[in-house]
Length: 162
Image (tube, rainbow, N blue to C red; front, top):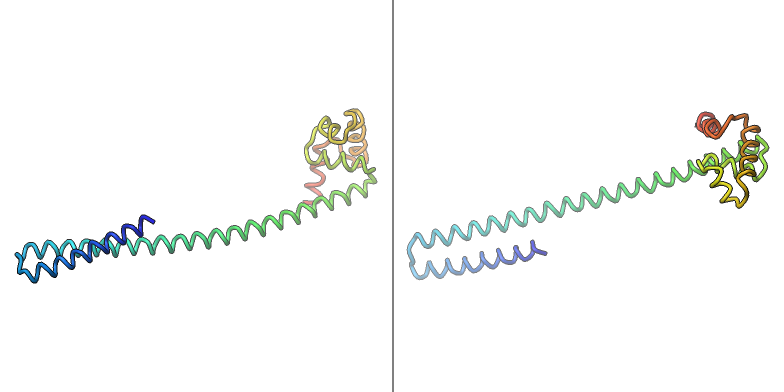
C-alpha cells in the first residue's frame, strides 16, 4: 500500500514540476532556476523508476517464494503419505509376526503397547486391568517371542524388519 502512495506522490511531483518548468520557460526565468527544476524532475523520475523496479523485483521474489512454498507443501504431503504407508506396513508386519508367535489378542495389545514404549502401569490403565496382569502378559509375550525384555523385543522388529 505504501508503495502505491509513494508512486502516486512521485507521479504528482513529476507532473507538477513539469508544468512548473513549462511555465518557467514561457516566462523566461533565469537559467539556474530552470536547471534546478529540471534536476528535481530528473531526481523524482529516477526515484519513481527505482520504486517501480523495486516493486517488480519484490513481486517476482514473492511469486518465487509462493512457488517454492507450493512445491514444499506438495513434498510434505507426499512424504506424509509415504510415512503413513510405511507405518501401516510396519504395523501389519508386527501383527503378522505376533500371529506367527501365536499371541493371544490380549498379548498382541500388550506387545504393541510395549513396542510403543508405554510402561506396564500405563498399559494397565489403558487396558483397565491390574499391573500384575499386564506384567504376566508381557512375560508371556517375551517367552513366545524368545526375547528377554522390551528392548530386545523392539530390537527384533527394527533388526528383522528394517
